[in-house]
Length: 458
Image 1 (cartoon, rainbow, N blue to C red):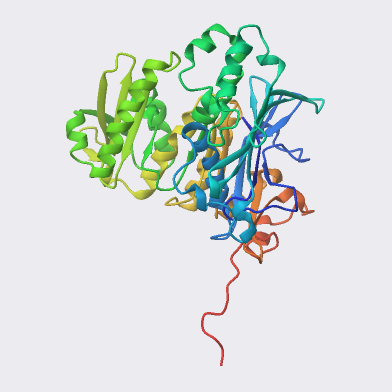
Image 2 (tube, rainbow, N blue to C red; image 1 turned 60 degrees about the horizontal axis):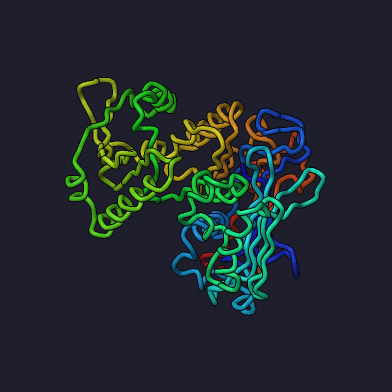
C-alpha cells in the first residue's frame, strides 16, 4: 500500500522551499468518522481512497505523470522525452536534481525507495532503499551516492555468500549514472533470490512498483482485463454492470485467431502487440510466480484479450454483450462511451489484495451519478480489503461527508508563477457542517479556474 509520494523539480512541481519536496500522503488525518475507510494495523492508519481536485492545467495530471514516470524509470529505464520533464518555470532547474520517493507498506513493514536524477543530463545522482520503523528510526537496505562512486549495503544484505554476489553487481554500476541498482537487481537474478531469501526485499519492492502500483490514464489503449477472461467472475461482473444501469445483462467471450486480431489493428499497434507478446512470453519463462499474462487491446471499434499461459499457448478472444435477450449480442463498439469507461474501471471493484490504483480523470465519460456510485461501491468493497484508489476529478458531488472523510479530499492549485501546490482539506479549519462542494466551487480552497474577461468592456 502507498504511504507517501514525494516529488521535486518535475513538470509543474518545483519545491516548497530550498529543500522540501511536494508531498502527497495517504496517512490519515485527525478525522474520526468512517474508520472502515482506513487500513489500521495499530501502528499506522492509511487511507484507502483519495480524490484530487484542481482546475484544468493546475497539475492534477502532472501528479499522476510523476508517479508513472517513477514507475517506468524503475521498471524500464528513463522514458523517452525525460530530458525535458524538469520544472521549466525556473530556468535554473534544468541542471538541478529532480527527486522521486515512494513510501510503501509491504508485508506489515514500511519502506522508502527513491532516487535523484538530473533529467536534462539523463544522470542519476543517488538512490536508496530503507526500512522505516515505528519508532521513527531507519534501517538501511542499500544506499548509493553515484556522484562519489560509493554505496552501502545494510545488514539484511550482509550475509555470507550473498554479500559477495551483491557487491559484484553494485561494483559494476558503482559510478554508472545511467543505472538504478534496484532495476539491475531484478534483471535475470532468479537463482540469486532462490538461494538467498534475505535478498527478497529487493524483488518485493520492485514487484510492488511493477505489478501493484497500477496507473491508469484516460485514453490508455492497453490494460489488463483479466477479470473478463475468468469464467468464475461472470455472475459477479454482470451483477456489478447491471447495478450501474448500463443495460447490460450478460456477456460472452468469443474466440478469435491472433492473425485476425492483428489484421484489425493499425501498423503501430500491431508492432506493439507483437513485441508485447514476445516480452510476456519471456516474462513467463523467467518468473515462476507468473503463470498467466493477459493483454487487452481497446480501439474505438473493437476489444480483444490475448492470454499467454505457462505452456506459452496463445488464446485470443473478443467480448460481446447482451441487453436482455441472450441471443442478441452487441459488439464493444456498439456500447456507449460511459459503458466502455466503466468496463475500463471494473477490474478495480474485483481486484484482490495489495493493489494501489491511480486513475487520472475518473469522471471522464461518466455521468456524475455514475462517478458517485463507482466511488461508493469501491469504498464498500475496500472496507474488507487491503486496497487503495487515488483519483483526479472535477466531480464536486464527491465532496460529501456522507461519502468521504475530510482527509480523503486533496487539492492541487497553480500558483502565480506557474508551479503547482499539493495540499489536503485537512489543512483548512473548515467547519464539519461546511458545504465543501459549494466552498470549493467558490474558490475557497483554490484548485478552480480563474477566468479573465473574454470580451473587454469598452
